[in-house]
Image (cartoon, rainbow, N blue to C red; front, side):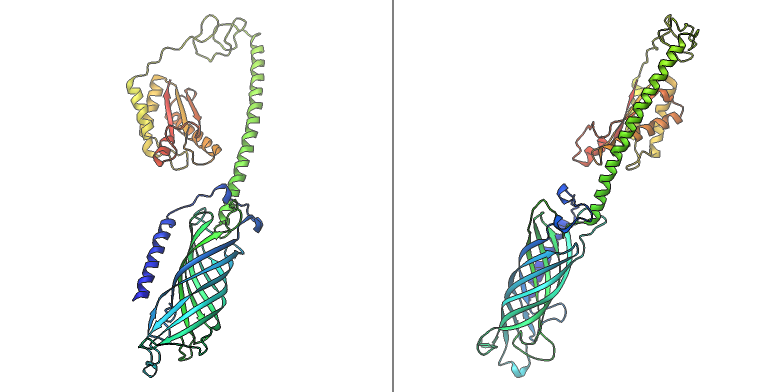
Length: 452
């Protein structure tokens, strides 16, 4: 039947559009953030829309009307909505069009009416619309908002009866319009196309307060008809404000938390910098006092050169010195190709748990080989941790430092000299590949080894 084929086409179009958008996880821009518990004027709540679709006497509640064969016609309308809260809005609707049906009808009246056509001159209703999915604990902003609605309206219509021979007779003798109330009940979903334009796919059943909508009174039930529509909705107001129907208050609370957390991290970093400065000043003062005391001792560092002539005081015990008390240059360290291969293999096999500084177990074997050459050849090693650009600067800097320190701790646990290993974190500031692709970000998440 014509009605079924038209409905299938609408359903397929809706599935194609919604399927494409459901795959999106929108990322909120700065304009989408509103402080939790903000006043309503922080949002855009008013919108207007236009729609078009199919009008038919067939409904999902009771099949078709008093006639045996429903037909479908194009209808069109417009609406104005004020979103009163995240999940509820008031919508004023207008639509018009034609509704048709045909036989069979009871044999006693078959000669009088074989089909009918009701012209809806106007239908105006006020509905409450309940939005179901703008609050999400998984996504920052949902691309689709399902809804259902109900309300009350008034319409004016003109039924016309047709015989088998095609003779048309107005249901109302004077040919005038009939005015009756109706109750619209609907459901659908809105799809975000942009911050201003949305796609509205809906289905509405209209319960008429009477049995004369199809020009045929029979039984005790009132007439019904449905309106399946596709429309465009346009948000009104400043584009810098988010739309209330799309706004996710859960994500606002999360964003607020992240902002406060970043502020606390910055304050903590400032306090740590002050403490480091005080510690540095204290260490310098202690060093000056030790140097002054060393001048009046025979040989404070025990290197065989008295402090009065010692140009390099506080030389570590056991270190060979020259006549001025300064350490002799260390023997030249030779790094072989095999040493470089072992380090390169350790870098290639090094992996951490996601978002953590925990080294995965399969990386231990190659790190053990690095520890062996550090112990056997007394090499020095510089570890440099790097991250991609996902996350805050402070978080990336901390993670890169923690991962470099984790490698150092593992090597020391295997016997390497901690004083000959330097671990530094550089955060996301030194990428070696683009951060715009997953492969590039994977290359940027690394710990570099440098033998010295």
